[in-house]
Amino acid sequence: MGWYTQGGFNDELGKWHASGHHYKIAYWEVLNESDGSDQHSMTPEYYTRIYDAIVERVRQVSPNMKFMGLALSDPIGGPQYFQYFLDSKHRQPGIPIDMISYHFYTMPDPDETPETMPYTIFAQADKFLTAVRYIESIRKRLSPGTGTYIDELGSMLPDPEAPQLARPIPDSYWNLAGAMWAYTYAHLATMGIEAVGGAELIDYPGQFAATSLLNWDTGQPNARYRVLKLLRDNFCPGDKPVETHLESPSVLAQAFVTSRGERKILLVNKRDRQIEVSVPGSAGGTVDVVDQTTGSSPPATTSLTADGISLNGLTVAVVTLRKQAD
Image 1 (cartoon, helix red, strand yellow):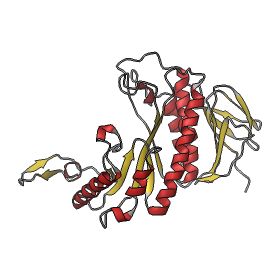
Image 2 (cartoon, rainbow, N blue to C red; image 1 turned 45 degrees about the vertical axis):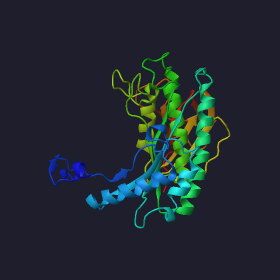
Image 3 (cartoon, helix red, strand yellow; image 1 turned 30 degrees about the horizontal axis):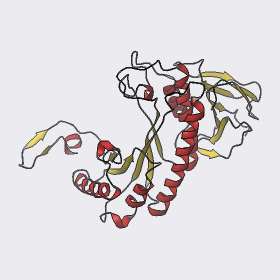
Image 4 (cartoon, rainbow, N blue to C red; image 1 turned 90 degrees about the vertical axis):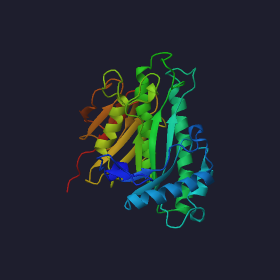
């Protein structure tokens, strides 16, 4: 901590090691995926001891630091970690848990085709969202002042660390991955999750190629990036989710009243086929769309002249309703 925030540190013999760094770090996440084999599959009990020890020492260097714990790779299979870690009787007095964190990635089976992938991907997302609701019930019961940060949310394809791609990644996959991200985001927003992180900025064949937000050859954004930016540009803290109903089971619709007083509706087509939806009151508004026709380009913006909207396969769209009269 001293190396990164205090310009350096004194070692155990009193010798000063200068770094020149004076970064302002808001949160310190203690370890990464402690439940995974790379971290020796730490038990909840052992991880909690490690967390307390690290936080105690880091706070001596940076007293205003906030801390996140767990960073689980498998939250669906790890409720015992939350049960133990969030119970104050298992931790040292005065050691804070400002946020818990965990990760989630979808992955279809190796023999799946682009046509079948959406069914698997969204089923996995629904399973994850059920786990989030359960984890939130544990957190609210044991440590209601602790926030939640899902700091890796993304998609993979089978054999993600193969040195070479077994076959080209279909173009539709990037839109599917973006649609899954938007679908999951909408549900997490209604649950009050404080922060969600899109994973990962850039990868390449041999290093989670299908998880990338950028093209590893050109550095240009792909559809996953465009969806993430679409959400970031339209929704922010302080927006209020509104109860929303849509007749089509294949399309998610979630309405928000933004902190600026705008009325917006997030639409996600979970299927790779065109679907017509009715959004009453949308005539006179606009829609911003990321779909398989926009590719890596910025969203296409269209003025709406009717209350019906045609969504191409795996589309993510944000409808902005016309301003209401005063």
